[in-house]
Image (tube, rainbow, N blue to C red; front, side, top):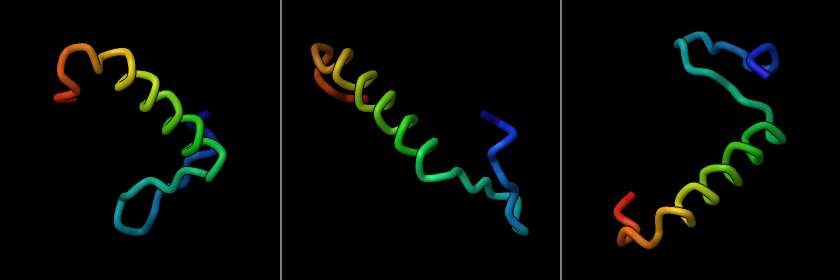
Length: 41
């Protein structure tokens, strides 16, 4: 997956929309799993 990541001129990484969506879904799933702790992150 890292091969699809492009480095910007300022060093920031541009992630393709599909990869970003997958990461976001995983992020939401992680937050949902920890929501019982109070949802503080």
